[in-house]
Length: 492
Image (cartoon, rainbow, N blue to C red):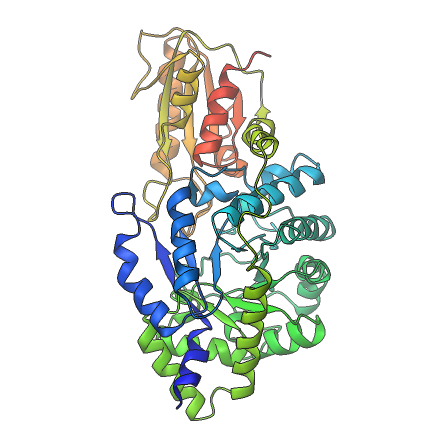
């Protein structure tokens, strides 16, 4: 095996660089040096501060032998990952406004902020249809359930993103809207008939391809009606080479979702899953496990004929084509002051009031936090955004463990509950429901009205069936917490 073949294979791997709040990118330094030495094709950036990310991106591009793809998941604006950038509401909240131009502006702002940091590939939008309340993955990440409408929205998002010189990514092919379990936790299968999948679930992906989307991300989910071998889409030649390439005429980059997830590597090593993903038709692989181990497995597969050398060369060419496409200078179109001002106001615009009106707050506002997501692993925003926004507006807002005599005004219960990776359930915990009802009973005993704030998909709040004024804030990101705080004080 030649050194060139190993370098070609390395270009198809994109390891993850994770930021640490205390140590920045220090912990990732060894991985970065190893990856650059091997000649990887890019990195997936998870977290960071705007200036630090910009410096890192510049360093990575300068040290690499070839232009890199620097990806990040920015479904909810660049602020979803990077402190200092603009956080935006989730896609469901924006599309619920019924304003397609707002969606385009959100995509443009996200792309402009990403480019100024050197991030050239946004792993968005979600093209999956929101079909089942028991789907543990999508929630407010999806643009809706109507295939025709979602197709239009998907195309608008992609065209606005790529007009700014940033690659978009249609995910998760062929659609995970019918999944009832989480591939972050286990291997799973969707047993929907093929004609149904092709008529509905594939519609947004057809629109994405028609709109010139740079990349499509595969689902770590099996669809027996599309591939009787029951291989997950990421590993399926039937779904990738026949359906996506031949029937849907997609000739751009196919990217595998994180290769370390149980949905694709359950029952096999990560390295073996990587071999099967490239063999199935993926071009580049996110989070490919230990780089040397995976490269050894890929080399062996190339040697013994498991991997077709011509297919590997095609993937190398596709990756290089798109890395060159996104390689002009990063500051060619910076976000304007009007862009960021509009983005800052968008969170306030998407708030929804149910069972209102919201009663006027007192000078002292007591807020109880109930967190249904506190048992879910992963980086989550802190829970102080509501009270901080209220204090900034002049209200003496306090987080309390029970209503007290310090306030005679409305008692606010902030419920953090959402569809999250690895959460694996679609209903509130019993202790969450009990806590909310206990707070409400305590406030009512003191003759104080209750206001509920839902920081997550509206379906979680609806499970409580509480007849009290409610603010739907769509998710628990800091930007939505702050919008909810301002919403509580808004004069109506």
